[in-house]
Length: 331
Image (cartoon, rainbow, N blue to C red; front, side):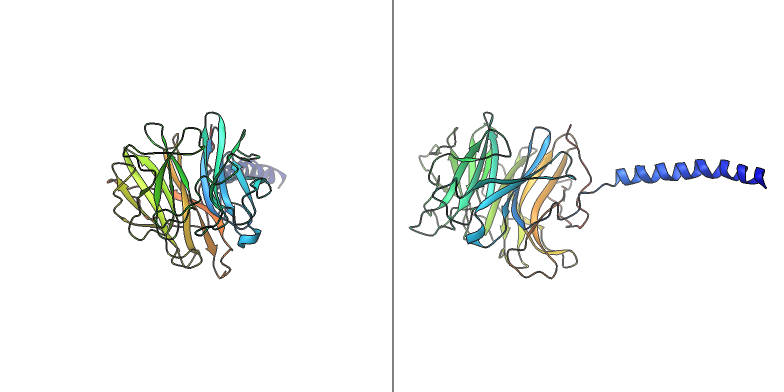
């Protein structure tokens, strides 16, 4: 009996070790980010890669009078996220008293810039798009101008939801606008003001069909992909559509919807940004959505899913998930 047990163990122990190793390997292989990416009510996420780190800058999702600061989040692999609290607030931005939202971020000449909207400005009020500067991605950010970069309403576009785009010629364009209208402007190299286009104009309207807010631009294989949010931000019809053009000024002919709710997963999926990780040639869409059964307009959470293209370069409609995306460490 002793010999039998000994012989049995000689077979079982390697088998158990093999199964354990295989399980650990499989768990490592399928390590996923999960959705939402981090705890808390956060919306309008702007995602970017700085060096060897992923960064997400969202709106703190709360009523306007409580939306007086911004946090950001960093990760080496899209799985583990670190929260950086109050990277900017209305105590720093003297002209802002509420509704700091929809950050847009970019690095330029070794400095980190955060563009934001404040005060939910209407005609004749102080507010609009501001810009802040920091020495590191997590701030603290300081108001660069002491006043809004854009305060006025031009072409019917409320000055919110700005996205800063570096074009092929290294010039900086900024797309922005709410209330169903979108403008593009050219930024000075130091971001202290606007420069005229070649025709002398400062503002160009580029509003596509069904545009509501949340513009975003990226280049892929020489083409300009312009994206925006449609529908109402508090409702289930919130979604993202896109167009493709040969230049950054359009015309932008609407192709179709690429991100929307799934009544089995979440509602109101929209106001996104796009991440491109060049080593893995992987695109991600980072967006907010509302958990099932939640009706509070401010209950929004930040999520991520893969974004892929077909053989013609069209964006394949995104499937929103609870699982999120696999780990993708930056080396």
